[in-house]
Image (cartoon, rainbow, N blue to C red; front, side):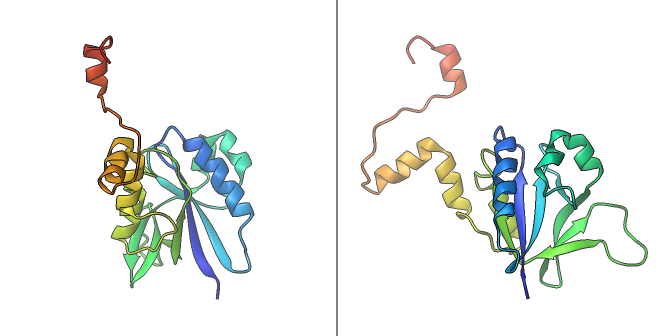
Length: 175
């Protein structure tokens, strides 16, 4: 039996397009004998979409059209399975489950997805994922915090100073 692999990509990040390209290239090179691959596109407004068109890079020339022809889903835990639940009006008969996944493979870049946010969301549903955990991702994305952790563990790093945008605006010459 194949492992159902949910490949998450996109998201609300300045690296949105890079994530799409990376994920599609990875999907095209995955072992389909071992994995049942379910591409899960995260739009810039953080909605998730699935469907036949989501795994084809050509469809990202017109994302609005892609979204209109795809199925919006959200995660749900049903009978101890991580399900992709359709975000449509409830069916009176039948199921609103699009599919389920055994493991998540986040191929995401940047703030709001790579910083531990997506990992935390997956963790809420007890979905195993192929990536750093929430804390490691958050620390890795915050360069100042990362330097502090490294320094506190006697790993040699260059000294640095951290300034906010407000600090910069108020005191640009000194900074």
